[in-house]
Length: 248
Ligand code: IPE
Ligand code: IPE
Ligand code: MG
Image 1 (cartoon, rainbow, N blue to C red):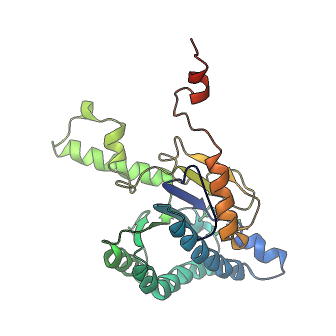
Image 2 (image 1 turned 30 degrees about the vertical axis):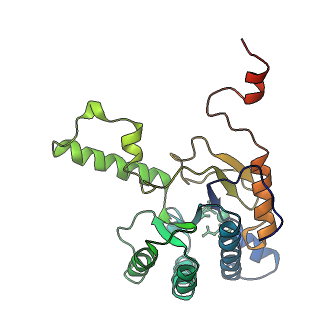
């Protein structure tokens, strides 16, 4: 580990890994080379997160809207995920990393779903970092699926509509048993959430950094954690400074 000393390490960091295409473009390379290089950044940041005591790391790997890209790019991204799990699963397991996958599992190709299930099953009892892979993930889709679960329970007579509250809906999200992200980082300079964790981001600190994802290193990850540590979270209450000054 580096000489990183932080007042507070976020329990859960989520990352919108953006800018692979532009990274490649800048070098006159095909977009696919950017995605390839992006996988190396994934490896580095997973290790960095584990090393500094982050408990949950969520990576946005493929959105429910990314199907709109040309078929060749979509297959390329699928191929990279497959290769990542095949190549890295054993090592992640050795490092005691638990893998969780969020997103819609219906209609996933038959060469992807079994691999994702195997990764979750193999690592389910691991106790170090939880690596959450957001794959075929869209926040609105997740919320709609959670609402449909509640509706089915009402229809089955096991739930009364008047008993539904935020906590119940939360319990039907893909992220049930995963704490909300403390920090959401987006690389590449874009400043939007692009349908990522909309429900869970209610009180997340947001950090937008200019680097393209393939250029995002361990050092940049630690810098982001430092910036997070300097933030003050209030959750609708008052700041400790205001309270100390004896606000009326
Ligand atoms: C992020 O990089 C990777 C995925 C969305 C899967 P992009 O492919 O979006 O790269 P840019 O934004 O076009 O540069
Ligand atoms: C968000 O990036 C999705 C992932 C990082 C997987 P996009 O590149 O798809 O987002 P937009 O289209 O620029 O909003
Ligand atoms: Mg992009």
